[in-house]
Length: 543
Image (cartoon, rainbow, N blue to C red):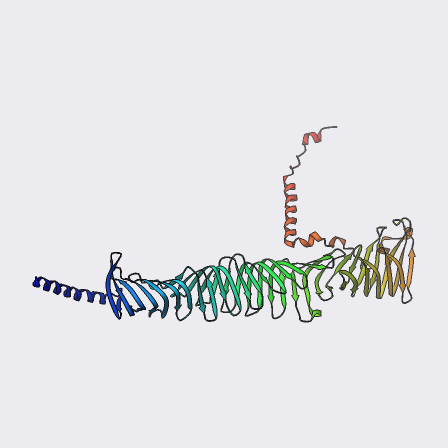
């Protein structure tokens, strides 16, 4: 019997000698140290209960804790109290209250007050799974990441520690010194400092701007620039919306592309177009691609169409202005016009038209090299016409009253011209109608006078005052010839008068509809049957 026991002890000793070297040589095997060690079984599985200064090592991974349960068969452990993992391969340290670790898969499940630290970030959560082989850390029940001065919070997070990529979902909130981002998802590259969100997201900057995207965004956090798809920017001064928005905080610039909508809040101006650029520091905005401006003026609305609109902001109210370039057209209930370019000063609602301007007010047409309009309380107060000034109005006899001069100033009452000052080289033609029957012509007056003042009543000439000796003539109807009815330079351009519908319709839409009409006409002409060749014999037959 003693011999048998001795043999068994020798065999057990030899077994230990054989097993221990294998454990030491296999890098996946967990080796441990502790102040006390008690063996036992749990749920049919043998275990080692380790207590006091517990330490596990597995190649370059070290695990510390107060107590642990180690299972030889599965090479796994449960750790409790002051848990700390040090992964030397990635310079990663993780602390928690509890740990469940699969040594063969090198997957650590940490629970309770988890803090993950590496060279780049600090991560806080209560529920973290750390895959040492795939180099990823994942949480699914809420977490917070601190990256230098940036803080990110989300319900779900996955951190690829090797590729330095982060993916977040559900209630994502990124807080930086310059802005706060809120989104349902976010992918962040820690190397390039660029992020991408595919869902609706909002950025609120430290100075109160709100940038919102409906279909996804891209961010360069290194230089504070953003690209939005179907987004909007809301500030105390304006609201901007477009299919694509680009914002560069470093340069202080914004860009919007596609279905641009801009609201200048303080000036009650709405501008739409295809493309817009803003330079915040310069107070400069440029909109082009069929831009349209709408501004509330009193109880009326001013509509303006041009190839390009430029807004210039300034701390001095008098310097705030809007410039319009090429093919300018305007529409207001009491004023319509066109010109090559225009300057609109917001402080007094004055407008200056340049390069072949022509304006219409009720039945009057005004042309000059330049025209300046002063608006007060929503209505035209005064119009100043520069060189080659010419006013034409059609009267009740279907003739044209005309005023011509070097310069003119027209004054308004309500919607109509009340009187006109002509300064230099003044000429006028006006037709006198019968008082009872306004359509019966009595005669035509033609007056030449350097300076004069012409007063109107019901849009007709009522009185003329001359400041120097006038040279005038009255021509009765039966002696009138057509060439006498018009002053030199007369051009009635009523066909060019813009309509509200024309201004509200983009030029490209007008061109498209014009082409459609032309194509329809061409098709109808093409579909007409060819004329039959006449019967030669019938044509030659005697009648």
